[in-house]
Amino acid sequence: MELFEAIQTRRSVRKFSDRPVEDDKLQQIFEAARMAPSWANMQCWRFILVKEQATKEQISELSYVESFFAPKGYKVNPAKKALAEAPVVIVACADPAKSGVLWDQTYYMTDLGIACQNLWLAARGLGLGTVFVGVFDESKLRELLDIPPEIRVVGLFPLGYPFEEKTGGPARRPLSEIVSREKWNL
Ligand SMILES: Cc1cc2nc3c(=O)[nH]c(=O)nc-3n(C[C@H](O)[C@H](O)[C@H](O)COP(=O)(O)O)c2cc1C
Picture 1 (cartoon, helix red, strand yellow):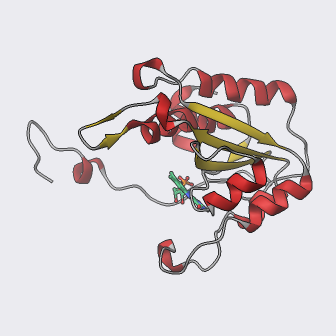
Picture 2 (tube, protein in one colour):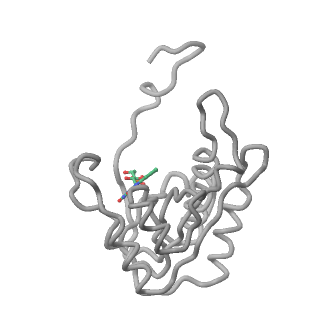
């Protein structure tokens, strides 16, 4: 798939068919993440590939949304079922010590954001679907997956073949609302 088509048609996919994900496609997805740019090329990202059904179900249980934090008033994370039902869950982690902190900016999140978008677009390009799940109980997830305390868990990606082709999706702000010329004028 051509790059701009993948960018334009990528959607959050939360429902999957039973078709397993081929290992060579997983390899290509990780390869796309691996090629992302990062702070001083330190590549602070680390990924865990989860296929065990019991583990996916436990991860799903940890994706709860605290009511004070729930975006749009969700009581349950809209991706909760997806985490249990997807053939694969990728857990995206960061080692903050392998990235920068400068002038109040913490760059491991930037590094992970870029790598995860590569992962997401690669999945789309290969006919797969996923969603960035950013709301979960990090400390319980750390316990479940033996993740060391210094490592941050940044996102969960339930991944599989989409149950159906998604069209449309949440609208974006027009360019006139997000781009100004020469100086801030928004
Ligand atoms: C950092 C981040 C965290 C997100 N966390 C969640 C989440 O916890 N649960 C969920 O269902 N979707 C989550 N999403 C998906 C967004 O809701 C989705 O990308 C957005 O509504 C735009 O829809 P689209 O991806 O179909 O274009 C997250 C996306 C990002 C980038």
